[in-house]
Each structure stands twice: as C-alpha cells, then as structure tokens.
Length: 158
Length: 108
Image 1 (spheres, each protein chain N blue to C red):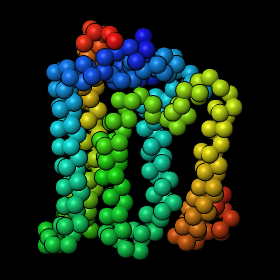
Image 2 (image 1 turned 90 degrees about the vertical axis):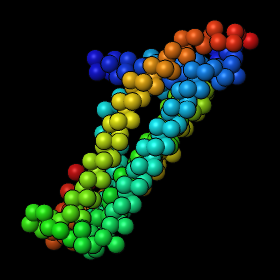
Image 3 (image 1 turned 135 degrees about the vertical axis):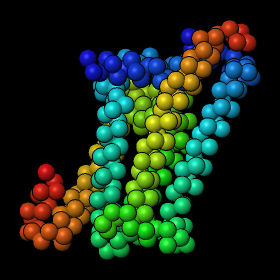
C-alpha cells in the first residue's frame, strides 16, 4: 500500500519533459530493473544516513573535540552544500525524470546483462567505503570512550 | 505518443512555459543567494563580531552556538518552502502545459 501511494505521489511530481519521455511508462509502474520505486520519505532517510555516515567518516566529531566552535562550523557547512544540491542540481534533474544511475540508459529496461553490470560499481565502491568507515568510527569511539578496539569496531558495525 | 512527435520549439516559445521557467529561476536563485549569505554570516560573525557572539544566553550556550544551530533550522525551512512551492505552484503550471502539449504548435 505504501508503495502504491509512493508511486502516485511520484507521478504527480513528474515534469513536462518527463511525462512526455518514452521511459515514463516503465518508471510509473514502479518496477524498473527489478527494483521498486523509492518513495520520498525513504529517499529522505537515505540522504540523512548519508549525511551521518559522511560526517563520521570525515571525522566531524574529532574536529569538534579538537577545535571546538571552529570544528562545528565545518559541520554546518554541509548544510549549505545540501541546499545547493537541492536547488541547483536536484531541481533540473527532476525535469529530466531520470535521477538514477541504473535508469540512465534505455537498455536498462530491456537487457539483463548491462542491468546486472550496472549493479557492480556501486556495490564495489560501498564495500570499500564501508570498511574504511567502520574502522574510522571504531578508532574514534575507542579514543573517545577508551574501550577495546575490537569491541568498538564491532559496535560501530552493528 | 513519443517525445519526438512534439513541437518542442513551440512549447519553449509558449508564454506559459516561459512564465514558469522565469518564476522558477528567480525563486531558486533567490533562495540560493539567501542561504549562502546566511551561511557566511557565521564565519564573518565569529571573526568580526565576537562581542555579539560571546553573549551568554543560558549556561555555556552563547549567541554563536545558537546562530550555528539556527543554520540547521534555516536549511530545513528552505527545503520545506521549496517543496511546498514546487508541489503547489510549479507542478500545477507544468501539468497545464503538459495537458496542452499536443495542441501547442501542432504535431510535427
């Protein structure tokens, strides 16, 4: 039910070019590349998670603990970056209708092998990113709280 | 109906499309400039208006910290204002143009 509502909401958001584009049909049905359409709320949670993970990866907590207010100003700078993404990049992208890597080519809907190949780069990148992130987070927790390294890394991973 | 059968140049020339485009551009860049100015008030204030930022409000919390936290509130507000305006106004205007897309300028 939630999915249906998401699709309908999504449909309302389509723009001129998108509604007239050939790919709009497959996108509207909500099944493309075997994935369901991501609702606005789900996407929002994903972006929030991205914000938190990038902040921990780049050591915002460490910056604040070392430099105080100066470090805090770095973390606030992210917000302006997000507004820029929203107003300057996401808005024009919405007019095109294709917002995802996997849907950027017509063959994505028809051929299986390119479709599968397209999944590889994101998974490879996120595996390495996640490893570094968990180690970074673990070291940070270990330093700040003083618990054992293994426990802190496993705790961060959980 | 495929997109190649439409007269895109005529749609581009349509006064309603141009009004939509102009309204959106003005609104988006206005918000963008406001958010940038508001953000840079923070380092400028921390560097040149320390007397103001040092005023303690509650315990160790001073105006500087509150101002930095207000950046979050302003960012949420900007996102909210944008979403509301886009859903209510721009999508309605775009839907109108889409409805008449076949009529505008005739098909090729």
